[in-house]
Length: 306
Image 1 (cartoon, rainbow, N blue to C red):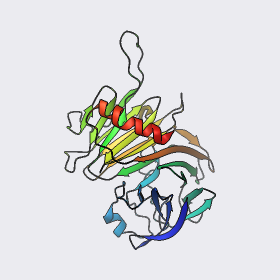
Image 2 (image 1 turned 180 degrees about the horizontal axis):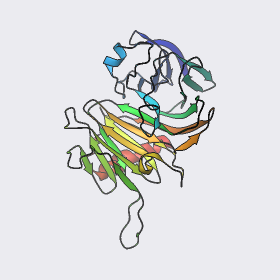
Image 3 (image 1 turned 90 degrees about the vertical axis):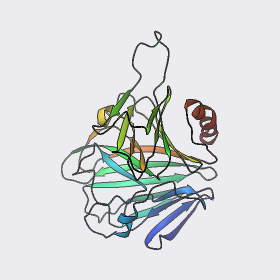
Image 4 (image 1 turned 120 degrees about the vertical axis):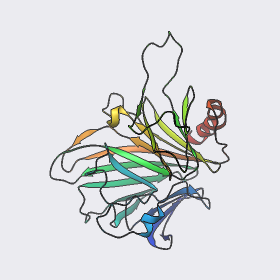
């Protein structure tokens, strides 16, 4: 049964807690819209929190990361992506949905909204995002949903469909990398069907890859749990960052699982939408190869998502 209650997060921030008795989500009301906690009821937070930024919170115009889950605009741009979200948000409950959004009173060119639909009896969530251009001129951007995962886990990124030669002569996807991406980095391990990226506390430098494919899903195994997220891919749409629909970023503090929507010109007052589905599994062993993912993880995911 869904419950929505007002609470204090870290005994400091006004927040709402959304629970079905299996999963809990906590969204701050003093800033955002964000989701700061996601996990099994009574269990640990799957998300990383930047405690320094939380402790230094002020309703000002300085950008702070905070951690948790957020929605941004892509491609990454200092003028439009890194807009501060330090002011109180609005929220409402509509039936089984909870909507958190940028306040009408907030002076922001970009307004963001997250609609959260927690399944009543299962460990999964449907999220719908809306990003609105509040400015006086048209802007080109794409919705970008980032889940900042706690340190110590392993990210999983599925490669596009594979097949033998010479039956498959055309490419099925693209792997995109950033200037600081080092493929000799030991965190990166690629099999035939999946890429795995192990988080490391003291890496030489950050690591980031993106993928252009027909399907966009990512996962993160940590502390015997597995966080899964997927987003629909629109065939033929213009995606940012050389056409990527999913990305993984990892540095010494956390790993991010990111999905993106198409890049579009948005007129004043116009909006873009984006959707994700989340799921959480327990009693999961960190996979060491493609076979582990196929035999130990995918059957459990299929049961939960079906």
